[in-house]
Length: 326
Image (tube, rainbow, N blue to C red):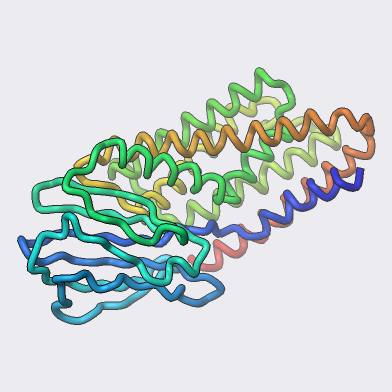
């Protein structure tokens, strides 16, 4: 019994951080036959820049000055390398990555229109640039990015978790999750392709507000007041899913897309998001089925309300925090 309480409490405690752990980003673009622009974007952790830099590549030298700055809680470092030979076949090493717990997305673009994308990590901080990269590389990279993004996107998962608390019928749950998936797929594609645009900060605030709304709906239902979320969960999931899609698009914009394969990368990033979401839903449903065997309905109802009030308080804090940075 105590173990079950601990699991639920730990689950809620996990969401006390709203900001996901974003990957670092290294973009290399060939501008002329012998020059390349480098952009290294490193996320802030505990208000400090992670010590990370690209090791000087043999046969290359810096041209001009480093331009440093900050954007969206990340430090940026821009510079130009002049190389005597093409970078294909050369090895890129990101020093300092091995001392972190984050991934780094490396994206390269060449004059001939070809591009390469791969994920580096603390155990593998080097990449040998290929002569020709396959579409499979893009599929693997962006699918994994989608999975990790949703599993580390605590606010998105908390919204889905709240829906699971409202919808207890498996058939209705299927329709609700499908509506949420369809909605955020539409807006993520539209925003990523530049068809529609909404400022990111208001979107993040409304995402937090959507979680608070669901928490209030759960409380009202317990008090005998059946609200919209209980009667039409698929509609609520679809409406707020449109906003969550803009949140996914904002993250994807920071990561970047290979120019010659934008559609492919977008599709498989979205597939990765859905796979991560299904993994989360399956885990929660499995835990719920296990909890049913406790046969302590009144006690578990109290635990559920404890979790719901925690969700409400946390999402209210996020709303205030995100509005304050407008």
